Image (cartoon, rainbow, N blue to C red; front, side, top):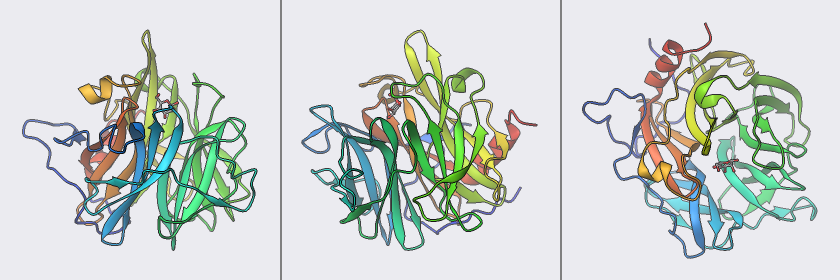
Length: 328
Ligand code: BMA
């Protein structure tokens, strides 16, 4: 199968070939974790973070839980997407409405470039968790827009282009706590203020994705559909276990699921995924993809403590998703 990938050529993203003897569709960076928990002085942990190409370099928005255990998002920059300089102070948003802009907490950011702006979505504290939206052009000044939805909602993930003229977002309605349920929904907006045309995309099933699911990185556009990498949660007798799976969504009607992995593609198995502030968590929030080769560097949080990378080829992941789909 020849899979066409829509996107930039990024020959300079981090990369390692699959280790000898491995047949896994994703494999971990040998130098993981790429961002330690204490990279900046205030940090208790740096995880569930998003990165994006920026000219010849890279920029990112990082979840930093500080040593008062407050959840904050910080911007950062890197030449190689491996060695990051993260601002010591959280992002201070410019916001026209002091009510919306009254920062309470923020976590699990995603970042995407749409036309000439970089949009950030994150879980924003506004009488409970909902989806915050902001944009920047330079990663220096960030303008906060309206929250996309009413509380309670998490895992708001924008598509990288408008679909039939509208901005499009996946999200996961939730509760005000640790949410023992959760399906992925799709919504559209003409202006990033008013959201509607809400559609159910997919719900929980069995095993690793039996408790709740949520969109991960910005969906990757391919000739076979949108490749959505997402997290799925199993409730064990020791609590939640966060693994990673993949789905293919229809390009024009992304609420139509074409394929979806029955097995996980990554699950918490290494020390830095199993041991930390919240054990047994692999939580993907970003992917850098070179459209020419299909090389992908997937950024994910390990055990709510550090940031790690896994590698894979988009073409292989698309094929794996079709070959191992629970949808026939
Ligand atoms: C979710 C979010 C994530 C976190 C996960 C595991 O509800 O808070 O940020 O990684 O729980 O604790």
